[in-house]
Image (cartoon, rainbow, N blue to C red; front, side, top):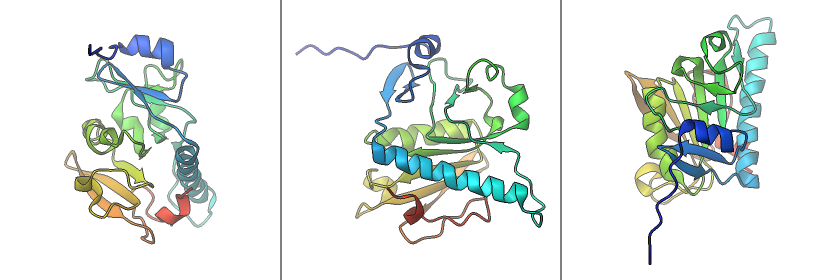
Length: 208
């Protein structure tokens, strides 16, 4: 049997061929199928909706003195500056509106190059769970993204990541000294977020 290595793409080739296709992202030149099933998209939508509601609640509550000048784009790619052939496509991304003016590609393409524009990313785990629990933990920490959520609603991750027995798990990664400190939540647990300290959220609320 002859082994055929996967085709290696540059960032420019990926944008030209797959930039508008939410099914794919690029990691080290290799095309990744994100496998966006119906339940996967339902969970992603539930997360984005809960975050957006919290942003609105803060911005329009007259008793709240903390305004959140944040944006949740429908689609968005992250181009890590140190990676020439990587284009990450988070399931949910929260951006700082003010810092978008410093993004070199934003006016023409929904692409973020500067980590400090990103306040939070969330990934809903698919069968390629290794990317979410390993590679993206490193990439997002390197970009100094303050908060990273890993929503493993089917309990797909390896035992070293979600424990034994496997079960639905919501992992919140908080950046401390450029390293993520991880806290895991199960069904019934109230999730704690530094970015949204008043957000009332449980894994149960976003399950399909």
